[in-house]
Image (cartoon, rainbow, N blue to C red; front, side, top):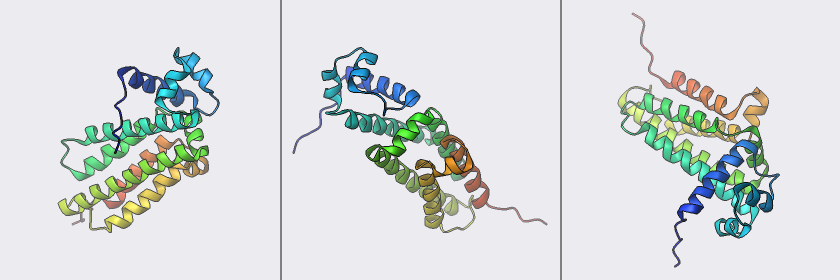
Length: 196
């Protein structure tokens, strides 16, 4: 069994630089020569990160979503109210995705391995949402709902956002779509006060 080597400080810095370039401009139009010139490094330095341009793109996309997951967990750490956790989590997704250009999101949608990385992240987000709903029902801040069903429906919406269907049909960015999903969930499952 071989262990993966940890990236060097230079490799981590290159990944961050590549992420910034890809977020702003997408990745499909670049060659490795373009990227090496842009980052002022050799192609062999890029090959040390990944053996091909396609695998490099997947590595950067995965890096982006791993960073999102870590920041989201930090964002909700210490919050006890499930309603606030769910709101913060979805707001965090919206803010994080707002960093991504339309070109980046289009490239992800059109490149299956990168799309798979996004889908994996979306499934993980749906699982987290379900855990927040379960907690909110238990704590009484959400009305009794079928948490798994609601989370699966949210997951389908997340998938629709991820594939670009929601954005194309509604004319919104992924970030705007996640904001709307947050509003829909929080108003739909929140406890209702009875009128006297």
